[in-house]
Image 1: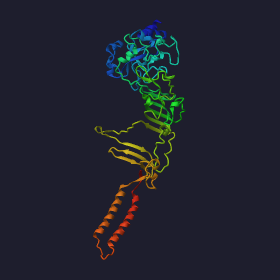
Image 2 (image 1 turned 90 degrees about the vertical axis):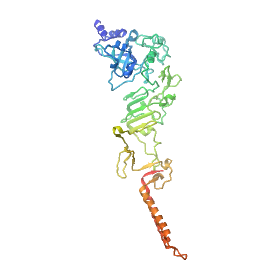
Image 3 (image 1 turned 120 degrees about the vertical axis):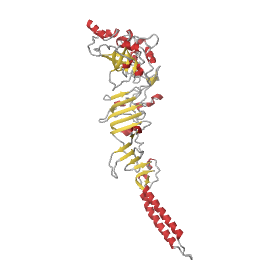
Length: 512
């Protein structure tokens, strides 16, 4: 036991934490150990690093200075084994992952800290892995207060002394169950009623938008990445509530719908259940409550909330009607059904209904309130972009190739086998085109043919007028041969011009 204690002392354990290590038969040369710690400062950059006093930093390690602190480094208070209860538990925690991956964390939350027990001289510097995951009624992607797990759970009617304890320090049943941010893990500061409030109020360099964020139910095979403020990327299979569905009456999440083979999907979404801020209760919006700091998804997440509303089984599910912004990339999806656009698709002139619905095809969908596609012009760097929307196909005269091109000189080109502008008669269009045009649409005219025809008409009329102006009357009431001949010629020419009108019709461009 003597050798064990000596090894533990060398790595900087203090108080209860050292006793736990000895009793657990752990030595400095053994595998690395995880501890829990509460975040007090976040080093976003050199500016936020200045929030840590040089005195505090020197106390942690003589070899450190503010300039050395990396981004995403944390100043924490260790609580495992009651460390914070018995002494100064401050330590630094570098990110465990390289800068390629940065995990979200907020001041006052609890993290896992990993220590390299074989290292010398840096015993108070660890590596933080991620936030400590709590129980279902405690865990919240926006902000989690870990010490809530030590309160009696909402479904239990516990008598004093029966609740779990924090590292064997405090009996949490003595804490009023209405306390939003209980302090069980930290040594109480006599100047503050709640030490967690002290931490949060004294660190104003770390802005965070506190807001209710719906929980997401993933399928077992999914890889899901979530930000703290309702942004999500899910590598999943095809799933979603459609506009015609009623998720509010669902008995379970749509994650339980049977996934189809060959339907691998990347769902990039921001703003699930977007009307949550309006306190609506329809579709996938979770129930919310206001704690004494901010609004959150109901703390009593497994039972009726304070207003008696039942748990929303569809909470946070992908919803193609109400989610704010989405990019949906799928190798197999009935995308028209997902978007609910079959009835919104225009009826092509000459057809009685919309085209057949897309069923289980490789698809990409974008949906939001405002969508912008911007091609950059940067004259200083010689950049002048263009945009092409291309439908591959046969480029012969009657082929199915089509393209919309916005060129770098500002030209817009629309190329296709048929181009329709406006609506067909069966879709609310004017329906006053010739009978041989698709859907009674109007064929657009071709300028060269129109120019030639009008010039000929003008020449014909001019010739007739010239004859009238120069003719010589025979007198004695007789008919004028010149006038008669000119009139006859004009009549014949007008008949010819009528036959040429058809050449004005475009065979590709139609509209109302």
